[in-house]
Length: 121
Image (cartoon, rainbow, N blue to C red; front, side):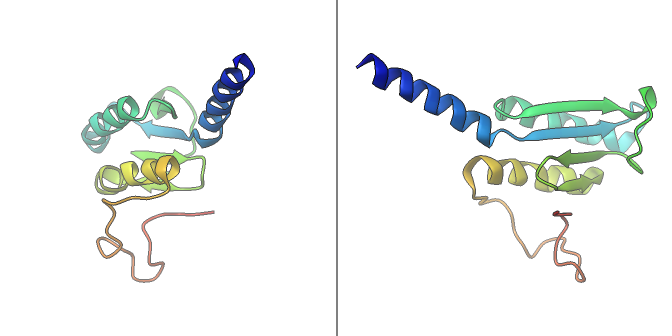
């Protein structure tokens, strides 16, 4: 019985490790768009604590991100700006957590050429 319980605990631990996502948020304290996005990023960090949430103040380092606010996920997705980040970040996190996203509407805000707001690798 003890072996079964230990196996279950280890299985749950490894599943949690596999599904974890790293979310990097690049911002500047002087940027009004960043200030608009920051509460969303903080809220989602609390809502999805099993993922790693990092914030980087671009005024305190030499980050070559080409503009802020920017969210980069380790699954190849990049979201930029005060419209894209609040609209799509939770969906991307949900897709990594549950492999589905009910809130995403593929017809809203899509670039006609790429058919996507996301940069997927």
